[in-house]
Image (cartoon, rainbow, N blue to C red):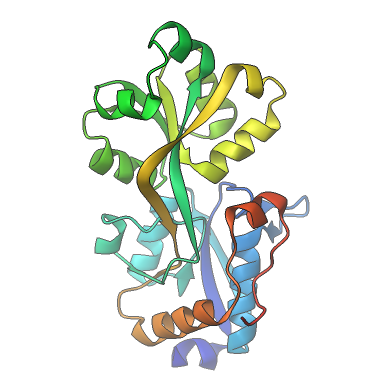
Length: 245
């Protein structure tokens, strides 16, 4: 932590891909979203400026950069998975999301007799879609070991089209990502639905190198001392990091 204070900047690794509402790119090439504001708030509390490291193409590549010590912290809607925790240290979660499925309404009414999609996915070797480089590759292997994973670049239009065209039985992700997809499509109420997976959660946290013990403790204290977002807050884009509880 002394190294950060001495150099006067906090090097923050973010992925080049967008994860709204956590991370988006502005028209002038800047960075926006909740995670960008959180990084700025952390740097401000430390009394330093932010230096963005945008070398990583995916969240998994970002984890690798943090593990090597190329950045002080990493944020990009990072799922704190067991596999990633072998490589980096995670802060306490600043948001816990429910895991969910995006499914075709018509398919489950016509083909599966109205059975719960979560039950079907867990009990079969069905093909499911996940976003490439996300924590859901790890979650699927652990929680849905029989499922056949198909990797796609993004939810919209890739995973959505795969679900509607019958390439996969479901898209697998978090409730916020799926809510964002449903809000973008005018035909969603007729063609798509979200199913929450019971007792399956996605803990979103900040990644740090394993040897950053003091910085990790400081970030945990900061997160404990400030208001944390809810799913509704992020959906509405209303909450900014910073105010003390």
